Image (tube, rainbow, N blue to C red; front, top):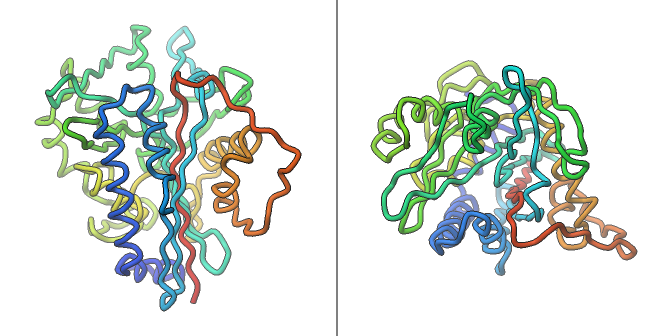
Length: 336
């Protein structure tokens, strides 16, 4: 099915012990963080702290020439992630999401695959597996504005001079329909992952989204027709286009198989430069504002294994205690 050397070797790597170790340990940490029942403005920072604790998430398989590493970061302040877009005759404000979920694969030192999705978390109401998600875009409702943004990616602009630096992102394709997504958290400590367009289709006919409606969409949303390769991909394979995961373990497995999110870099030429630019702006902002705190993540991301000269740089941390944008990124290195 996949013929490039990078894809073939990656397909072998997902059967390795190292892959299984990272998949299980990362899922355990995500599950542990969301089980603490933190308030929404503390949830993502809790996930970041859990992922970055020791022992670090680093695994190798020397026989396959495989190394895998996951790190996380947190940019304080909700205002940093705000954007605006036009709707009808007015301008709407929305947040890009709670978490940038990103994964890269390098082959012989060259980036050959990268995927990303902006995830918004929603907690269920009390003990019920039920989430309020208004979809009336004619009303200036925060949830409705954000669902509109993450399901469509209309021409947008950064609202402040912070994260997106009042930059215009006018034409960002969403080929996968999974550049924007939701993590629906429920008790005792798990989540359902679904792409924003799929969630909107489910939520538009009712006042709240329920577990029953999620399961109703599972079969259709989990079908992995890969726009990257123009064919249907078995769900347990690699490089698919899956828009639904029923729990944290399922999500992490599909994420590490590069079957979740928008393909921003691919060695078959199906790149998305506009989406890549959006993702790179997040990491550039992190490098500018918090280079000391997240030096190892930035080295991992950009492949800079030499020491960074940051001795004369001071981190600039935004307003704490009021939420922010999290980053969860994994780098997989392959060699013959």
